[in-house]
Amino acid sequence: MKLRARLEKQGIASVALMDYETYLRSTLWKAIQQWVLERDNFSCVICGQSKLGRLLEVHVHHRSYELSTFEGRNASQLVTLCGWCHGKVEFYSSGEKRVSIQEKESEYQRLAALHRSIVENGLPLQIRKRGASGSASFSVHYVGPKGYLEFYALGSLMAELICSLYGASQGKLRLPIRRGIGKRTPGTGPYIIDRTTKKIVVKTLCSEDMAEVKVSKSCSYPVQRHFMKGIQQAKYWRIESTVVQPSAPAAALAKRAHG
Image (cartoon, rainbow, N blue to C red; front, side, top):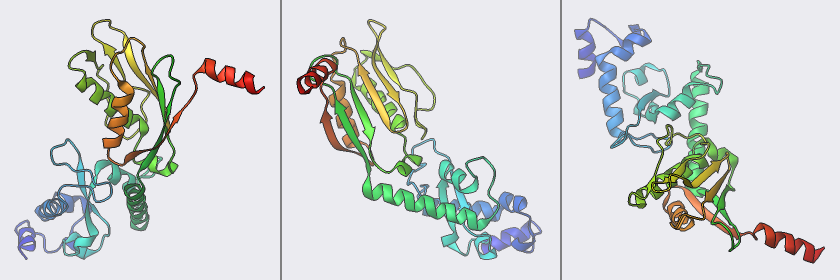
């Protein structure tokens, strides 16, 4: 009743008589929006990302266009979504906007079910180490359902691990500033430079489901151990298996021996 009284002060008899753009500018919607955000703790109900303490864009999404939803009386049809999830719900991959509320709800349900599956199963990785001789390079392979990568990119994980490695180096390493580290799209490969030699000592090359970590022989920091620990602590990512691969010369000898 208080919210309706606010409308009356604006000379509006009913929400049903408002066009959508006017509704979004109304004090009624601003009040509804605020309590929905507070109810959801400013966190996306699909992926769980929270605005609290972060520069994250969050929106309140209408799951239906019924009058009870617009008036804020049907709380279940009003949810908080992060900008990324809201964009997926509102737009096709082509960038064209969805018009049908049924299609929007179908996409909302698909994304919610997909993320629940990620939470339940995790994002499994296989670490493939090189032989004992040579450099300390290794590779990280994603071995789970490909659909999970719609939410979480291996390139983003590698960027986070590179950042943590830089933080742990106590100023010995330098991290070139690159944009888009937190995005959910695969990166081309973050790297780290030794402050003294000015040379790249750790480099990652990322595709959608595989990341190659190349470590210079001059790098004394235990990169592989740091990455393994970081993956174990990362949200949803998990190490499913570790495979030790023979170095190139050893592999050639083994092939000749069996030939």
